[in-house]
Length: 137
Ligand SMILES: CC(C)(COP(=O)(O)OP(=O)(O)OC[C@H]1O[C@@H](n2cnc3c(N)ncnc32)[C@H](O)[C@@H]1OP(=O)(O)O)[C@@H](O)C(=O)NCCC(=O)NCCS
Image (cartoon, rainbow, N blue to C red; front, side, top):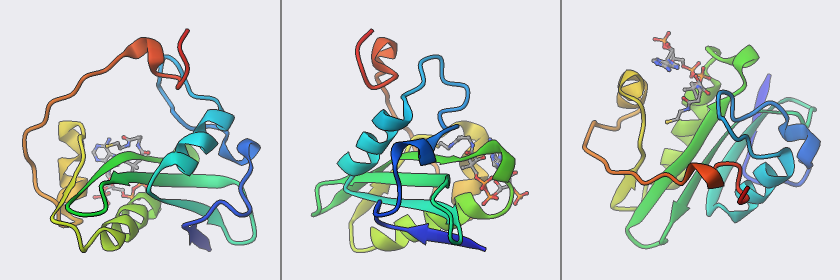
């Protein structure tokens, strides 16, 4: 059984191993923990009774009108079991009182988010790849 938590009470850095798959510069588990702590909202998924994180979602918000879903990832070995859907469902519910909730995603993921009630729109991004790991090289 999967549990979803909105706190980090039982989570320490080693529980966050294995994320940022495919990133050229991967944040360390310690940086990942900092990222979660710095987010206005987040959920982490674990197996019941375990602290190993299987997936997580984060959002940052002004608390008045807008929120941005910054990160969503499920570990490769537990993908396609509904964890990503449940993480997004929960964070959208948490942000339901806001006017706008935005995110940026690859085109092939549009269907995934559409099923959760979102709709496609344009977006602009800026990336500083030397800062991708959460620290400057
Ligand atoms: C996207 C992601 C979070 C989905 O998590 P998950 O737990 O596997 O998702 P669920 O099991 O709830 O849903 C799976 C559905 O999403 C679809 N899906 C997942 N990744 C997809 C992708 N890259 N492109 C298209 N569809 C995708 C699956 O095909 C599946 O569809 P189906 O139910 O019609 O078969 C996970 O694949 C992941 O971590 N990917 C890498 C990081 C990423 O892309 N994050 C999103 C940033 S915007």
